[in-house]
Image 1 (spheres, rainbow, N blue to C red):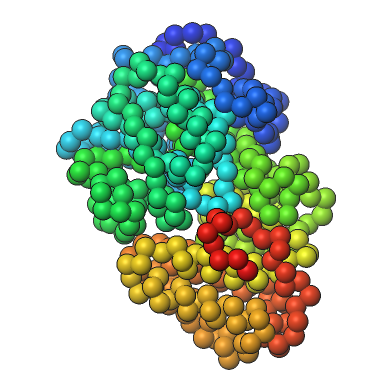
Image 2 (image 1 turned 45 degrees about the vertical axis):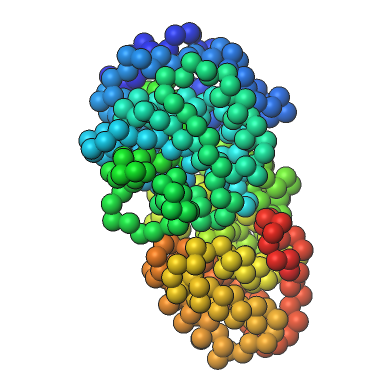
Length: 448
């Protein structure tokens, strides 16, 4: 029996979220959307009355935690924050660990090119809050902490307005401003900051769901994951698995960045699709691009032709040694040098470490300097060997995953942009060295 059979929705649902003959790709307000169903983007934040009229209000009082967790387990929901960890496993661990659990809504979205979580908060904040309350009911949590960057002003304002419409919330809910840094959204950094120790990521052996903030079970989920949870609570596990793939069910949100028609547009992938189909339909691309960076600034570069036919499916990407990560699909065109773009990102990432280990303190700046030398034409083939050695020395090292993420970015760049690399190593001027159409970086970044 799934949750939809529990009769816990007080009002009839008027929204049609079925997948029968529906489109595979949608944006906010279009027919066939799930997370982005409802009013179009230009309508702005969906109010509580509109949200409840469209989906029905969830009655949480009588929900049985065990059956709720079983439904989440049956759905196969994976976290959408980048790690892809099974949501039900976190719930099971938290529910069976000592102490009263805490739910953390990770709305920090520190990836500069990503907009999916901010878009959900700006347009559908009540869907996210519903998901947080369902998570609290599933594990018996007494508190919900929303961890968000104050710099995401529109999303924060929408969230505050939505919270003001929920004075009757059965669980205490508070909003905390997250540090505006790249690493502050990693789960261990979130827990560390909320525990008063600063946003310091780590490779802890004890999961936060077992012992997190003040040693209490702490379930950290990102915004998209919780929005999915709110729909599973209404429509059930079987409905949820109609989208996506058996190994990674549910729809997926992507943010398009770089040389696309509308950088920052968020697309919901509801059915089978390739990256090329997404970029053609909503990126405005009619030709294969020079290259695509998949998964964010610590993601993987792919040649355009390879990316064009690559499916938007987490398990298929994992088989190819890649990750969808935070869902960023960033494109460069023929007017941008991929190595110059990578060097620009690495210089910024090198300044985003927690400064707690050698690979970050010394390794990342050294890598940035060497990559700069390559782009400037000051390096030769012998220097390339040293560059690759530095990259290899970073992989799997350090107190957190930050050095490995940068290593992944650089390794894939050296392979994807082999032709440009040869040109730079000969000391010749690259015809596309410009990074003028670079991916977004916070204004505090050193300009290039």
